[in-house]
Image (cartoon, rainbow, N blue to C red; front, side, top):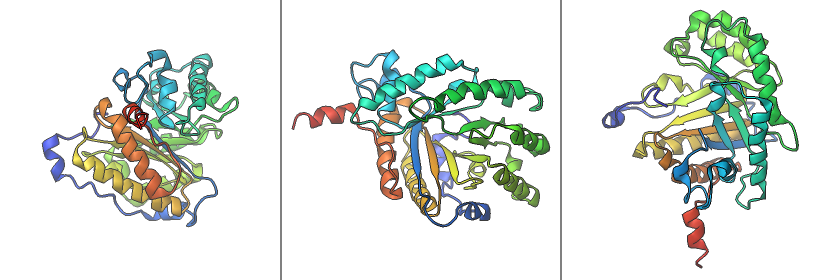
Length: 316
């Protein structure tokens, strides 16, 4: 993700501290732990050949990468669906590959896909008149909810940097028309959305009424898009790291602590996605992130086991 990145030499000037919870977040969370809690840790794709021998077994072939991925992490940010509407048959093949991972002792449990809405709906022209495309997309991704497992997480809608509050009425009408069978979340980028005026506060309260979640993007160059604002008792976090910089680790600690607080106050589910800038960093950082999240929140999640650690353990 290039959005909001800054040069490495400027990272020391960035205030990475997480803002305090705004009033709406405190209102959305009921104040006591939810009966069922879900904590999902994932990356942005599974088709990474350089993970073979560390994240994936040394014998892994591309056709088996998703199965290997689902033995390590328990969600994926499914960006592929942003570029085309896949058929149900195509998506079913992915479901089967995830189901095949369940025979592993390292399987992290429930696995969910979090698809990004097709760009032909969110990025091309007006939102009105896209009903047939929305229906086609929704019908396809519902295949994740069929069969023996429920594998559909939230569907997130990313809007461009130029999509501003001048289109608020159009956006709310569009969101109100979306099928309620799916948990929808939106990622807003235009700076004006995050000016906490009365108008914007009313807008986010409307999202709560519509049960539309808000994506939080934690990125160095745009601290405004990380308002710690919850509109439903679920959250999707896109954690944009900086090639393993020391701040990536301190920021991860801060997130684990905040999520622990939110789960204690009633958060039902968190979907945490790693955008680290280099795919080679994902295996070891995801181990760190999984261990930290599990420890600080008390909620079970995926904690990957790297192949090199498995081989070392087999010697003793």
